[in-house]
Image 1 (cartoon, rainbow, N blue to C red):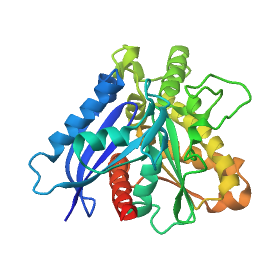
Image 2 (cartoon, helix red, strand yellow; image 1 turned 180 degrees about the vertical axis):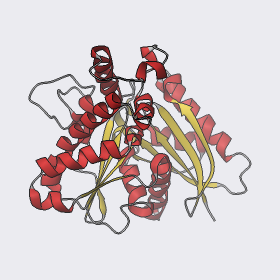
Image 3 (cartoon, rainbow, N blue to C red; image 1 turned 180 degrees about the horizontal axis):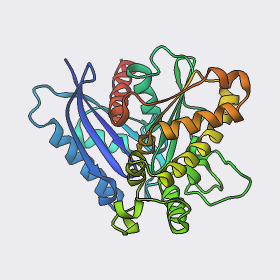
Length: 321
């Protein structure tokens, strides 16, 4: 039995895990991305975390897989830039970590990695055409076409969060305007929720949950309010679902996928969100592809990133042979 390390770098949290060849999690660890204000600090923290994880293992780590939230060259293990983590431009992360750790390293976009996890171990198993979407600080996508991960000419395919929804609209971190991410990313959801709470169109328990400290408002708080039956939280999540559904409708018409798999923290809002997405796709996409496409939550949930990173590592070792 071989051991691998999977690393899922997010704009908010970094998840690391030691997995065996059957994708069982042996050890895991999490880091707060915002605790590392410089690129060098984060690379050092990743190095130390890997050293810590492999300490005491009976076997050597065969390879390390990493998913990152941005544009990368997976063949070179090179990060072009990360949209929501400043300071990460033109970073040869594969070379740096492989040199420090003495272990083969494989790198790809984080939602490509999630798509691999779902294809090999999750809901996409046995499907031919699947689009994976993560909803969190950013909005990312991974595309499986005819049973294979599709990366595009410059390995940049799947940036679903940066599909523009309007001609004009709020500026996005990517440099564009009116991107899907700018309407359904964490920051926007909180902004819109604050507007609605202050207008108080519906009775709400949200201020009580955060003790009237609005700096503590997060999508997780809104999900808790929803589960407690809060009508304003329900309205907010239905609006988010409608926006996501509008974005997915164009993808339905373009790719005619079997399935959308949605993960990330925002997916924790549950069926209120998913039902709004499904309803909007039925209304907005062309009838034939809209009738057959499934829209489901990730089976692997919070572990999809580290499991997919290990799939990436295992496939990378096979390709090298």
